[in-house]
Length: 319
Ligand code: ATP
Image (cartoon, rainbow, N blue to C red):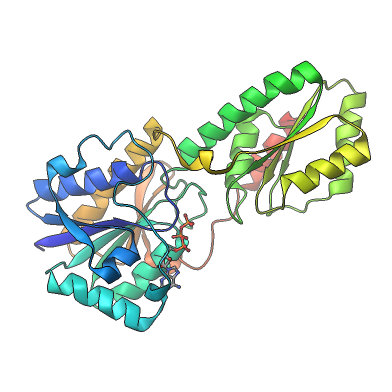
């Protein structure tokens, strides 16, 4: 194997740069040339790529986002689009590609492999919803951002005796809400994986106030619905002073945490070494603290379910 490429795709997440940096430096150390594909599958389709050297990935380890850019690319969902992308790679002599992204990007990777390109995936999304890995690159940084926001909301909520409703990201997954809710001591956590009964939520909030709680933090996963609507209902039904915050894209940015940098670097090294050893169609992830290779076919198409024992503990500790 002489030449590989690396790209980021789908939503950006903190740690993607750390992964690209590790791919480039490990590959060069092994005597393999690396190309960077700009803007995910869009760049692969448009033949927008650049040869990367060790120095090309300097000064990016600590930066969020992805210096290669990322995009969503509709034409790659067609066979013609994928064929053109694969031809661009073959013309340049690129035999393998490391694709850092979420479930959709990994589905694209699997389809690309059917056109004779070796692919290895790395889980890059803040949502932590990729099957087969305990953690995705970017999740740890995102939940730390959310917990920081919860800490700040607690200060003001306690001063005014308010209900603070905080909407967090995660698409259809409740991982961010559940984990940050537990770490931040949220009183109520609403996630799409669990039945949400808003009437019950309101009566619990009223009851907790009656039994001495001075304020409440409610974390809502975006997959459940709008925090604004939920906040309106809480205010109307309980009469409690309620405020809503939607954290939004702040959750995607920022310098990656130590955990995300190490996860990204470690998984990236495995990805390069796999391609060199002739292994492809796998996703590298972390399971019980060890690096694991998961068949791409197994990983895609179904999201990782939440850990109900964590949800149970968060509920218990909020009483
Ligand atoms: P995130 O979860 O962070 O948003 P993602 O990788 O799931 O990331 P998507 O928008 O689903 O984000 O996918 C990114 C890109 O991957 C798409 O724009 C498209 O180019 C490609 N892709 C997604 N699904 C498919 C598919 N079924 N077939 C081919 N390509 C796909």
